[in-house]
Image (cartoon, rainbow, N blue to C red; front, top):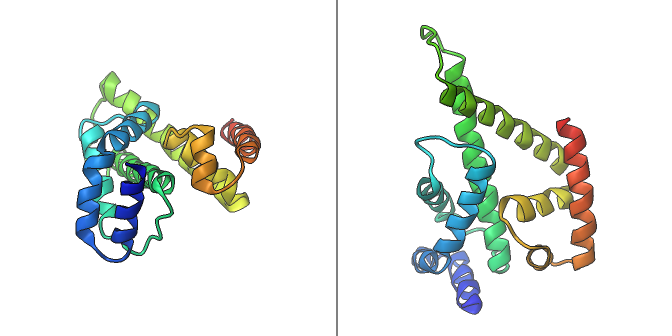
Length: 183
């Protein structure tokens, strides 16, 4: 099955949009797991559930025929990054709406307040990750693979085409850097 996924990714890269449609049933369960993981860690909203997040990612990725997909690990890392960007966009929209835009203020129920806090946290994590990316892109990619895509250290090493020990060191450094940046 891994060879099928890699071949479909290559075919999609060559411009065959139908290859992406054939790919989705093979990877859908893993994409749902990535979406659930991200939603559980960051942002809960009635309009953005697991299925909606996977669907939004699909619509953003289907036209990305220019991406030179390396293998399934690379694909899942890009999907996780895309889902993170979607969640950040939703959080930004929520924060902008919270500030009013000229609408009369209303009292918030506790669930909305919790969701606002999650949006703020997600935006803080995203800003820290963007800053880490400017400092050290490889550490940022390790975080995307491990934290957002839920990849094992071995899968991350394969997706990044590096050694397992390098991923372990980078993961430890990235977590320490993010902890310091967020506190």
